Image 1 (tube, rainbow, N blue to C red):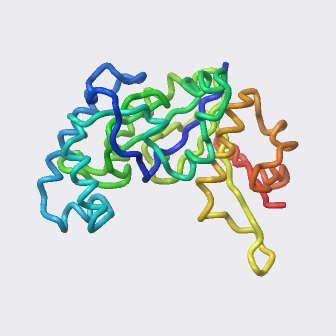
Image 2 (spheres, one colour; image 1 turned 90 degrees about the vertical axis):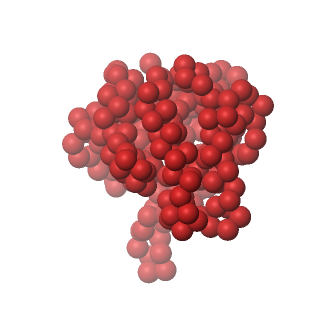
Length: 257
């Protein structure tokens, strides 16, 4: 069975779309009851004043105006596949559209994206433009990562059964997925600082994980042993001596060579 790869959504999103507005029963994973509640709370929050909306969405000026408009229209706006909607650096490195058809089909069952609005998303799911972080508190729902945790965890536990799980989520999205007891693989990218000490890469972390996700989609049988011989496109190699394991989670460290 192909592995399961958890990746975050992107802050950057393509606008517009040619698909019909979002409706229940149009996404691969059934969380429509929860999606409708979040969408309603989000539309309500867009009636707040500028200061409150800026605090919630984390943007201001023209970006705030655009995000507000997208969120207000979320139930009626055109849709496009999630893999086209998300435009951030991780998705640029993943570049699913350039892969062979067989790999693109595999990605449908391999890639799962936790979303503050839509819960769990797969690449072909039709979604409208929107802006909302998983870590914010929204209306009467509270912090979204906590509100989503039970339904996301229950759903993912079923999908994880018998599969190798790659958890490439940042802390904000990992907080919405409590896969305690489920064996997982995580990736950390390290490079030497001016003193020669290895430190975690932060600025390019999304790009690096996007390239790793692409490799996993192309080569679904890849595990830690196979990665030891793989050179990351940005010049990182797995250092098995730095691998750690705790409570079933294996942390793999890639070091720039």
